[in-house]
Structure formats: C-alpha cells, structure tokens
Amino acid sequence: MRETTPREDLIRGIWKENPVLVQLLGLCPALAVTNTVPNAIAMGLATFFVLTGSSLLVSLLKNWIPSEVRISAYILIIATFVTIADLVLAAVVPLIHKELGAFIALIVVNCMILGRQEAFASKRPVGRALLDAVGTGTGFMIAMLMMGTFREVLGSGSIMGYSLFGEHFEPWIVMILPPGGFLTLGFILLAFGWWKERHSEAIRVRQWPHGVASGEEVA
Amino acid sequence: MKELPAAAAGNGPGEPASHQVASARLITTLAFAGALAGLVIVLVFGWAEPRIQAHRAAALRAAVNDVLSDPASYRSVYVTESGLSDAPPAGADTVNAEKVFLGFDAAGAPVGYAITGAEPGYQDLIQLIFGYDPSEGRLLGMKVLESKETPGLGDKIYKDMDFVTGFEGVETPIVGMKQGAATGAANEVDMITGATISSRTVIGIINHRVEALGSDLGEHAATAPRAPASPDPAIVDQAVQEGVEGP
Image 1 (cartoon, rainbow over the protein chains, first blue to last red):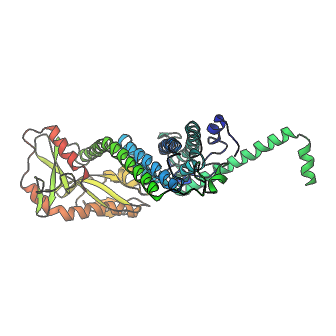
Image 2 (image 1 turned 60 degrees about the vertical axis):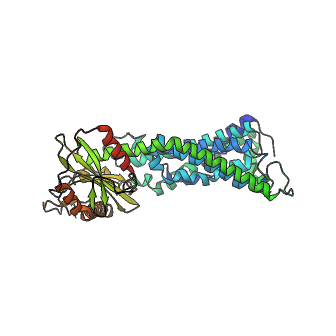
Image 3 (image 1 turned 30 degrees about the horizontal axis):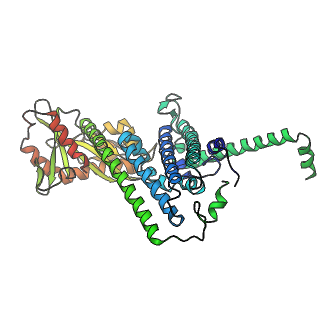
C-alpha cells in the first residue's frame, strides 16, 4: 500500500473519495433524512461525531484489540458513540431528534463508519486516523447538505425553514418524500460523474495535446 | 478504497492471520469493553434524562395550554378502574399512571379536561391531545402531539389550521364530513381532501376516548372540583411534569 501524506488523508474523503458521492456508502441516511436542511445538518454532525470518536478510539486501542474480535469491538465502540449522540440530541434539540427518529440509532450500521475503522483507523497512527475521519465526515456532511438543500428548495420552497419563493410557489412534494431522495441522489451522481469525466478529459488533453486525438482515431 | 485489499485478506491490525489468541483473552477484552461502554452510557444518560423529561413536560404543558385555551391553572386527574380520582391510585407510579388534565379559569372554576389519545393513522401512531367540556359535551380544541403522516397530505391534520380549529366547539360524537358536504349540524367536522384516513383517525381517537371516559368525566365534573386554594404554579408544574409519560 502506497504511503499517503497527512494532507492526502484529510482531503481524500472530502471530495475525491467522498463517501456518498463516490464510494456510495452511507446512502441510507443520505436518502432518508435529507428532506430538510436542518435535518441534513443534524444527521451530518451526529455522523461526524460518531466517526471521529470511533476512529480515535479504534486507532488508540488497535494494539489491545485481538483481531479475532475486532469487528465486535468496533461495533461496540461505534454503538456507544451513537447512543451518546442520540441522548445528547434528545436533550439539546428535541424537535430535530424527533424528526430524525430511528435514523440516529441506525448510524451504528452505517457501513461508511465501520469501513473507515477496518480499512484505515485500525492500521494507522492516531493523528492520521483522526485526519481521515475528519475528512470523511466532512465529505459526508457536504453530500448531506447538497441533498438537503436541493430537496428542501424544491419540495418545500424554503431553505432552513425560510420561504424563498413566496406563497405562489407550489411545492414539489415528491422531493421531500422517499422517491425524491432517490431522484436527488441520481441527479447529483449524474452531475458528479459528468464533472469528473470532463475533468479527467481536460487533464488528458493538457498532458497529451496531440497524441490523444490521433490515438482515439486509431482505436 | 486503496486500503481494502489488505483488509479483505483477513489480517487484523498488526497481527498475522495464523496467530492464535486464547479464548479467555477474547472474552475478557469484549467484557471489559462492554462494561466500559455501559458505564459511559449511564453517565451520559444521567446528564441527558432530566433535560429530556423537561422538554417533554414543556411540550405537554404547551399542548394543555393550547387545547384548554390558556387556563389559569391545571392539575392531573388519575384514571382508575373505578373512575377518575384526584389522588393517584395506591402504589401506582405517578409518572406512568394514565391521567387527564383538568384546567381551571381565574375564578377557580373548571374549564374542561385535556385528554390524550393515540391510534394508528396512515403511517404510524398518531398521538394527540384534546380539550373536552363534559358538562356541554363539546370539544375545546385539538392538537396533534406526534405523527409521521405523509408530508403534504396527511400532515395537514396539524398543518392545516382550518382543520385544526374546526374541532373547537364541536359536539361529540364527531362526524367527519367530506368537503362541501357539511349540513351545519353541531357535531360535524370537515375532513381533509386527500387525507381521509388521517382525518378519520383523528376523529376516531377523540370519539373513542370520549366514549371510554365520558361517564367518568361527567361524574368527576359533577363533584365540582375546584382549583387548589392557593394555586401554586410550582405544584401545578410538578403535577404536569409527573404526567409527561401519560398515554
């Protein structure tokens, strides 16, 4: 495995290997609770907290956890952080806690979090594991915000609860229902894929301004 | 993920696959981790629980104020097998006992009872609270406490103010009427177009609760309960807080 720099560890999860938009992990909350921006932010923050806390602990304890029981140990650590997040949200922002409902408890089975423990935090020093968790958590948050904004603007005609278009706007209700989650994710992935294709094309043309075109003609 | 192949090969962190660890150590590790996790959760729970209870009590207080149109004071009345009782049944848990809330006006006269109820709607349980005046058999108001009804359709049972305020002053048993079909009778409520099941559930909850408690409420009201001699807001608050877990 190629050694990575600290900067790479941090940046990677935010955009190039964004958990939702590129790795397609953590889709359950991304589809289910992005119907409004506040819900998306609360879920993003809760997941960020659980991911960072778990990565820190897993990386700290990696030498004490026998590999035979590592998955159970990771799940135990993750579940503890999720329970803490659940209780704190219920105590501090009861309305949002009510909206998110069972999806807070379901952070336990978010494979993005377990994936980062198994693939990264359990093998790297604490600092790197933290950087990776912060990057991945931020990437998740960005994806949640993109979906939440898109869905709330079209589905309720508002953003953070503030009306955008006045009373003559007819809300596109399907966007805040489950099908809207799939539609939104589809459109965002399409846009992301299109952007990536153009981006890599641009790099190719810049590197081989003449060779590429003729090579393609031959193929 | 670049790291995935190494993980898929089954190697634990820093340990070769062939290395065997004694079962005792595996069990000890997990037991210790479990105990530690339990301890942390208990500590956080101890911090969060009073706050969660306070939020619930505040929400219920606001709801009681809403459906009884801001009474001067109110207190819990316990629902027992032999009728309504001002004192909690012996040995009962005051938090979880079934109860209704009796509101009083500034002169100390009862204005009505706030009654909670819950039944399955279109998506999930709909929980609501309504104010009821047993002497006239009329509703004073209705408020949905909890519902997961379809956004844009079923959620009109608490977002459509015409529907919500339509319950004020209605006689029981309530009859739900399709839009435009109302005949002007005193027990009619306009249902929501496109949310028939949700509207019907709301009406059903109120009718069933009034049916179940109706005679008890009448008897209790007939004993002419008065407001506490010196309505101490703290005591009233306490009574409501104890009632937060009521059905």
